[in-house]
Amino acid sequence: MIPVDLQVVWQVMKWPLAACLLLPPLLVYLGLHVVKREVIFVDLALAQVATLGTCVALLMGYDFHDRISFWISLGVTFGAAALFSWSRSSQKRPVPQEAIIGITFVVAAAGVILMLSRVAGGKEELEHLLTGDILNVTALEVMQRAGVFVLLALFFATFHKRFALISSNPDEAFAGGMRVRLWDFLFYAAFAIVVVSFVRVAGVLLTFAYLIVPAVCAVMLAQRWMSRLTVGWVIAAAASLLGLTASYQMDLPTGAAIVCASGLLLILVSMYASLRKA
Amino acid sequence: MKIISFLHLSVLAPIAAWSLATSASRVPPPAAVIHVVATTPDLAALAREIGGDAVEVKALAKATEDPHFVDAKPSHIVTLNRADVLIEGGADLEIGWLPPLLESARNDRIATGAPGRIVASQGIRMLDVPSTLDRARGDVHALGNPHFLIDPINVRTIAATIAEHFALVNPKSADLFRANLKKFDATLDVHLATWLKQMAPFKGAKIVTYHKDFVYLAERFNLEVVETLEAKPGIAPSPAHLAQVISTMKAQNARVILVQPYQNRKTAETVARQTDATVLDMAQQPGAIDGTGTYFQLMDYIVTLLSTALQEKK
Image (cartoon, rainbow over all chains, first blue to last red; front, top):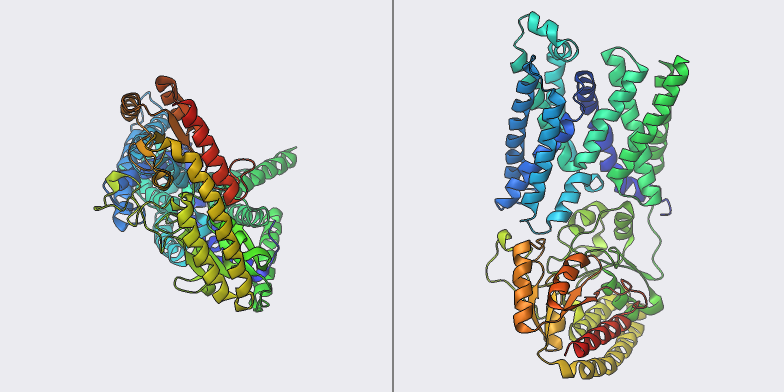
């Protein structure tokens, strides 16, 4: 255990804390959509495809931190976004969308392993992509993400009604003559930007946790979009604080500590929810 | 909605308390002993020999951890933040993990060029310095192979550098550091003579290693590394390359494979089964193997294990 000197604590943890409080709200919003659409693993699949894109960049000789490797990664992920919007819109197909998402995930994961076997230190690089490095996040990285997320939040807020309709009642959207495919692609493309830029600072596991756990808690505790969003953000913030504190006090890897803290909160929330029902 | 307001309070209260508590700045008291951080346990062991009671030494990487890849933890940043001296191997050994930690730690005492920053590779005659650089060739270090502490002659140089920097950082104990260095050098001379004698019968013996991490040992004791299990440094062994390693080992009669604790022993065992070789549990970090807490104990262990195996396979 590290002796607590608040000045040092603040110095070490302020940017991870900022990242964990400022960035999740948009993830929570997207999580609510994802839970509604029952495409829970779309995030893991997109994150894995993004990682695949990063590996392509690494193989081409670019460094992980080069700007170009971000764009390559994003481009590859847009491909997957197109695949997902197409697979969902084709209503009458007998193949459930979750199957396509699952297949995308495993093939991308295997592709990453194949590619990294040709990159120096591949195994460790793989682990890094999974667990991220939220502890060493810089002020610049947090600001950049915050900027992008605010723009995307405006985008989602502007078209919230359409997205909400497609997520909760796609049949009605189709019947109403909406261009569901296009809007679905826009949804997944924006989703991809959020996932790719967050995965690069926080890793695949933490991104998934922020996306799904607060949304699931929110669905259990509240009804309307706004209140769900609030509950979700509070849960995300609580998990962040709990995880960061545990990470500091017990000297644990930071990202994994936050993920486990969210798991713990989910258990508490579901106990509370079932008690309330009874 | 009651639960929401409750959660709000419980989340916001600690943040407020935290920012209040940290707004009052405090100056740390002057250190009685030098706080030394070494990136790896071998450098930490040297710092202890030279610093004695006048230093407190911590290593960031564990003895059983690959020094190329260390997972960042809050304690690393705290340790770096409080350090008076940082000893790094250099030659890009820690390039994947140390720079972001240093940035978070914000400590001018150990900034590049400060007396508190020791780069062990400076002053070492580096091996494997590449003529061209290309990521496709694997984890090639532009400044040469960073696994140089395994050569006792290099250790002598580094110990002197450490003593020099310690004296700069804490002039009051300069005499102690010089005396400790002298003692260390004398002990090293005695040991080195023994090690050279132990290894003398195996001049030109052929060995295989997992990574390119024993080239300095091989040079000091006149051994020849005929193959590495990794086709290129840092790239996992492929079946085709292992087949080639097996045929080289048979053709050149290489019968020992050196593997470190964090490397894949199973790969080495597979190769050893085909070539009637012995897999040796080697380590470059004191403490990675029981009973090797100091540099001398570690080298005793390595030389004894290696000479015994080479004797048996002769």
